[in-house]
Amino acid sequence: MFLRKKASLFLLTIVSVMLIGSLAACSKQKTASSSEKNSSLPQEVRIGYQVSPSGELLAKALGLLEKKYPEIKVKWIPFESGRDVNNAMASGSIDFGNVGTPPASIGIAKGLPYQVYNVHDIIAESEALVVKNGSGIQSIKDLKGKKIATTFSSTSHYSLLGALKSEGIDPVKEKITILDMLPTDIYAAWKRNDIDGAYMWQPTQAKLVNEGGKVIISSKNLADKGVITADLGIVQKDFAKKYPGFVKQYIEVLNEAVHYYRDKPKESSQLLSKELGLPPQDSLKTMQQILWLDASQQKKYIGDAGQNGELAKVLKDTGDFMVKQKAIPSSPDLKSYQQGLLK
Image 1 (cartoon, rainbow, N blue to C red):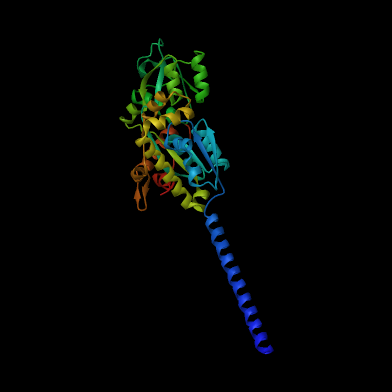
Image 2 (tube, rainbow, N blue to C red):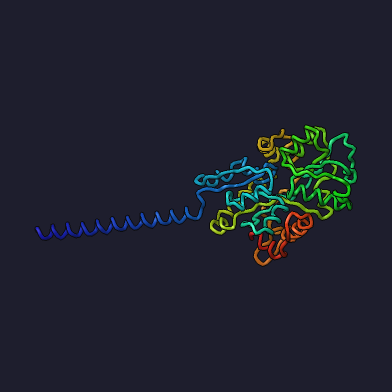
């Protein structure tokens, strides 16, 4: 009897040890699985954005990324120009950025460590040449001897130069003073009457019009002449390589914002009015001045595996133009621009 009890106790001990071991193994497997899952997501994402109407700015206003990934710390860092975003990308201080086609072409030409992953929008009336009422300027040909401000190496700068070229106007010969200013400085110079006009994007453009200005030509007019500009999403190469799934998910977030705007334009304008510093009706007007692109339209511009989109050629043409303007020493071949796109 004693031996039987002792054997039963021994068996019970073995079973208990085995059960504890099994539970420990399951716990380890669960922890490893959880750790593996977490390692596929960044702990922090730094997004460099510009205060201009776009799906990205609306996604920020809606808090879509924060709702999708509450465990990730999302840092939104504002910039006034694409060249500042390029500098931040070069220093590694941001993971995502928003730039126009000229800064992107310059960045790829200089070998900055990023790729274009999304075309946010095609620029139309959202960028334009605004001149002061009473300046005597009725067309591009009337800019002789005038002071026009823009932000160098931006889509606005590219469009201004393209507008002059389309009319066969040499700014040097015509003594047109083109000043390099950031949007806030342009608005201040406008109010001081230091400039006669400015080629600028929204919301600054709307503020200039409201302060006694009129639009002479827009980027939509120039697009009809082949001078195409767009707002692009860029991502650090190392970040995209380490977190490819997250990049795809962020594109879905941007796509959600675009469709929210298409379905609820008034609600979207109210949200962006706070971001843009404009009344809701003015905010809606600026939002209608760009062509918002959703995920289904990305292939046309970025392409996919085995197929090149239209954007690489636009960037190549832009880079070649920037060389002529001495903004960059050289523009690489088309293949380099194709490799600058994340498919």
